[in-house]
Length: 556
Image 1 (cartoon, rainbow, N blue to C red):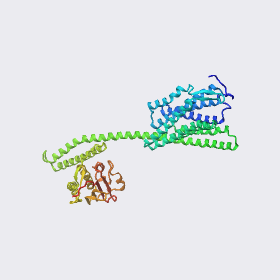
Image 2: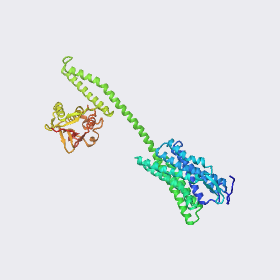
Image 3: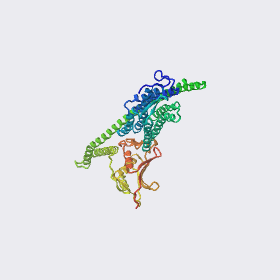
Image 4: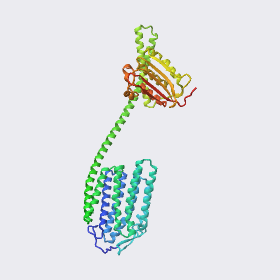
């Protein structure tokens, strides 16, 4: 079209014109600065991140719209007005599309996919095709110095902006209801609020202008961009949305300084100038303190993250070493079994005279060899069982088990060791109350034997008492071993069930592996039970109780 000049003076330096109200420069300048600075800061922090790229696209679309609108306000040339008007019609819905895409990327943490892209492109296609035609801008009205809009400008752009806005809301709430992550729920609500504030403020210019015909006042809507930047900044600080906490804080403080400082250009009342100056100084001082505080926090967080990663690496290494240790113990124990079995076998044959009669001293030496070999066999068995438990390979065969019979067998087997130490030994096993439970009798007997054997070893004089009873209050069966031995201190109780741990009586029994009680408790817990210790202190004896669930116990 031919260039027509409107009835006012043209601009200086493309955008400076008396036709442009000061509020336009103020609102446009702050919005443009906020959008460009924040978008570029985020983008250059991590250019490969899709969320950063999407945010930059949305903010650049907004910036292009502002620049085109500024030229539109300042120029008096009809051709420039028509061109910049068309540019705003093209880029305005791009802001909405960018906001939609950004929400999808931030929530799903991935590219929305080809389906979403095709729908967005299909919605934009009529604008791309028809905007240069009369369906976009039909003609130019010289009296008002404005273009006459066609259906694309009047209806379609607004329609797809509404579609994008509803799409954002529906998608956000659908993801909000699906996720159980409380942190993500909060982030969705916060980001949705910020984006809706931006879009509503962005659209308010057209809405206010259309309703009031006051296009100057309508420009206040662009203050929605700094508000959106504020929401994004808080989101970055609280949720690490773009992982640029310090830069976000610096950008926010800088934007506030410019926002308040720029008021000096149009505030005329002295009182307002004073208040503006006070606010300007305050934001500089407190903004600087905020930046320093955030900087310290970021450094501390980075140090913590480094330490956490180092600890995780060390923990993985320790797990690997622990696994190697367990495998080594298992392998070594298996390798020791065969020669120990051979030593025991030949010692037994020598003791029984299979290779001829032995002198008394020789027979005593053979007995000691046999006893030492048996002690080593017990240690090897303990090591093998520990490795099985740690590798999850301990097998249990649960069958109906008569605890009365099991304990009576135990009493018969332990009489000789008790008599050798001249201890008082008695057992309280009910004859008319049978305790039948589902258990692995071999392993459960190993637990009972270990506790009784420990009491005998650590009791120099006095008694060892065994009992089997029912606790109706807790619905449990209790096997207890009470002795008058060395006792246990409160400090030792806490660590007695740890691997390779020994009690105060360790000097009396130097041949133990320190694994017996650890294995006993693990086996008891595999039976849904536990072992507890009670002692009044050193030299006052002790009580060991194996507590097993009585569910399924048959009373005869």
